[in-house]
Amino acid sequence: MRFRHPDGSLVHLAYCTNVHPAEDLDGVIAQLDGCSALVRKELDVPVLGVGLWLAFELAEQLANSSDALHRLRQALLRNGLEVVTLNGFPYAGFHDEVVGKKVYLPDWTQPERLHYTRNLVDVLAQLLPTDATYGSISTLPLAWREPWSVEQDTLARAAVSRLEMHLARTEESTGRRIRVAFEPEPGCVIEMVPQGAEWLSPYGEGGRIGLCLDTCHLAVQFEDPATAFAVLDRAGVPVVKGQVSAALHVADPGDAEARRLLAEFAEPKFLHQTRERGGRGIDNLDALDQLAGADAWRVHFHVPVHAAPRSPLSSTTDVLEDSLAHLVGGAHPRTLHLESETYTWSVLPSSPRDTAELASGIAGELDWLRSRITALGLEAL
Image 1 (cartoon, rainbow, N blue to C red):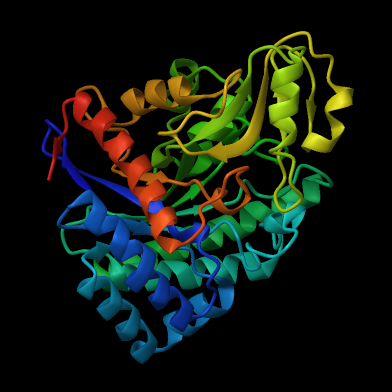
Image 2: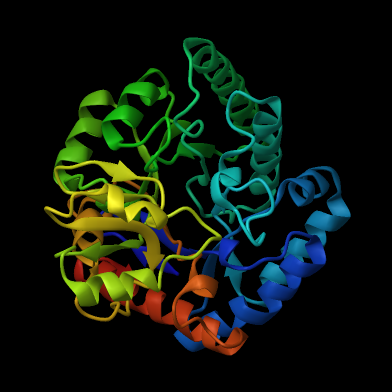
């Protein structure tokens, strides 16, 4: 979906297609012709944004085959879909039976990560609508937090410098500006916004390398949105992309009913890092006994923003709305790209039964976000 900010900027809202399992071209086209088309129809919008997730083999194919790229572009056109952003975090296997820490591999010390991201840059430069100010690609926060050495940090910086040069060459040769956004996530080398601001500050001046702010991750870490944005401003680090999502919130970990309902979210596919306000954190829900339970918990489980979990559980939509005001409210937007990234529909306690139900859920989230964005003074187009 598209919105016009009062300053004249064009703001894009997409849903991330990493919710779909396809990793080859036929499968991705089928999801665009199927679920994505249904979402656009339900929302009744002229253009629906999709934040494409392209597994590494497909990214390689699209970057090197004009015929494959043409097929993808035609699927987007016939369904009224646009692509201004790609999710370059998962490399492959995001819908394996168990994903866990595999999602952080290859990391930014490994040449495969740079090669994959370069391919995504080349593909996005060809898919980007002519009136989009820039294209964005979100990527992982360097690596899982351990092991991480000075030598690994040096390797990562060298890779990001080579990426920055590729972005500059792409802009010069195509006239399209592509930007890459590193996404802080609990448990990773760049875990919180201040860490991201510090690590990314050397690249801020060029504007091609910046931060992807995920409001679920921000909430899990109990970060205050206003403080986080102030830190980024001081460091001169741009917010290239915002992922507008919500985490699980447990106000009283001692509540037996809350613990019973929380157990329904303890599934093996994805990591569900959990943090206690003012206390320690754990890497998954199978280690809750390591938390003191003296204050509220927040869980890295992306839950639908328009449908609160059963009480006494809740979600962090308050953090999302506060962050959204900083992202696109005010005199000028901090970012032009927003993405709804609830990839967990298949592992929710009550998951959608079919494509139509999934499309209805995604449309519900986007409609909820649309109402909040227009309330900030933006015009839906």
